[in-house]
Image (tube, rainbow, N blue to C red; front, top):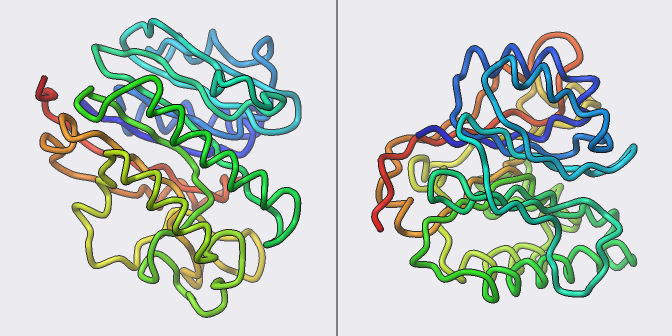
Length: 259
């Protein structure tokens, strides 16, 4: 089973790229972020023609997440369902083939110390609480998405330049580790402990040609899936060419989960 995650940075701007990539990469499940479109304008027919069902939690202009899958998803749930702020479409859960699949778009945070930064920290706390309320680490679960956090120094091309920012501040990194401590495994790190591989590059300052990037996109899974993960990769090809997203897809291969 191939599970992938991709911040497409607008489904309308990247629709043809997405469809071409689906044909080339042949994932079984894809978690999308920043679709930037309401549910009604999502390209369901084009996605269906490519062989995928779509569960969508959209929002006009900003945010928005979706799960595409070859198998029809069930038990779809939108948001963190904790009574907190749900004005931003950032999380969607679906059950696919007995696996709980969650696509998440963690807030950027803007600047350290700002209200948006506080919102980011609180949203990550709420995400950990969501996992605690709804699941146990013994359940096959994949939490995938753009977390807007680089975990380690080898996940950042220039760690000293990013240390004080919302993407690499120690407080945010600690929040990320607290999330993983619930019982999640970073499968890309499991297969690439050496680091130096990135999933996001700024559009400015020739960041991609210089490989001046950060690893912000993750496939985090519980142990029943982690033990069957055979490979993980970042598809840099999708950051090339005309009108790419600033993120590249991340994908991992899994054997049948241990139950």
